[in-house]
Length: 419
Image (cartoon, rainbow, N blue to C red; front, side, top):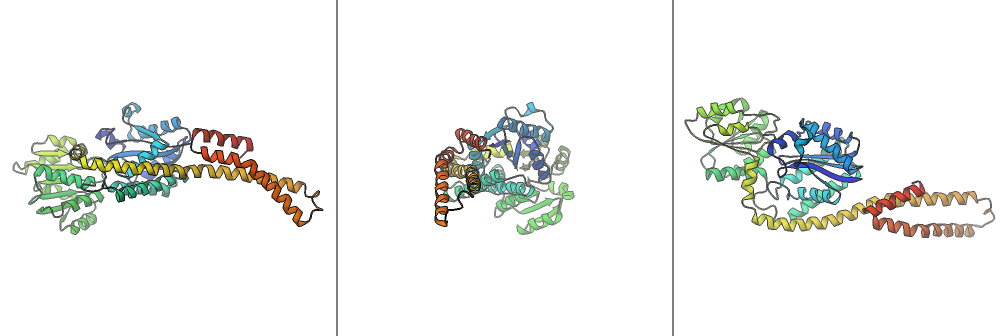
């Protein structure tokens, strides 16, 4: 069996395809059980963020497992298989492990070294465990991945500077406007991403920070933390007429602001421009709104280009992080090798011991004249013979575990000894 990861991310797929495959929290339990109900998959974790949707799975057969996951993506998005050509990537075994370690370390993010992704990996694993769709293989892998992510952030400078999409969104807004000092900033959404943007805005000199959210209490709580104002979503049109910047990051599955909404808002602004930064996935703002006169609409594609412009130092730290990942891959291999070989070695020794005990029992009548010391000697001699016979096979199995040769030896032992 192989550990595989199959998915698409900000590097391999256009934004509209990422939107079609985004999975919100409410749908995640059904998605996980759907994956594990497929014929060739026995464990599954789904990681869906603004930058990626990935399925980590244990596949009984690689090619069949790949087809199961590819079909899952087509079912999820209601798109034909050919729409995913050239966009889906697949890694298995060591490559899958390295990929997850890189994701957890923030090396595969739009903002290299971002801090949020480590928590997202942990949350995805936790949800899968709660749904019962993980077992020993993925539990070991994800536990190790979280350790790798923490170690990279401790031992390298990968997390210095801009370390989240939220921070990058605010930095991009500052870059476009020159400064947020004296500006009215409107936040649409009050979740983790909005909280990150509010934190980045704090101290930037904004004259007014307004938080709009579908849940009033959540909006009010976030606004109070940053001396802002909370409004209801129904009050958005009035605030859009006054705001200088709109930063949006809701978890909505449909468009929150249509082209017509922005057209109406701009008609009330006396020609003043409006900057919109939409980092929601799926997007909150109709992409066509960018054509409204006076509106500058930036999305995740623009954010990636903005971040890529200043990455020289971060790339040097990324090289150090990859060194950590290589070391951890070796350690992970050792752990999985021991895990794979140990049950089979135990089963082989148990089988041999049961045969030894059965033969001693069968000969019990003939050994009845032996005293306790002589019986102990017979027991020791037979144990020694079994141990010596099994020594070389078990050593070779452990040495080869995790390789194709190890798989062949393991299968042979199972067949020969009916394990």
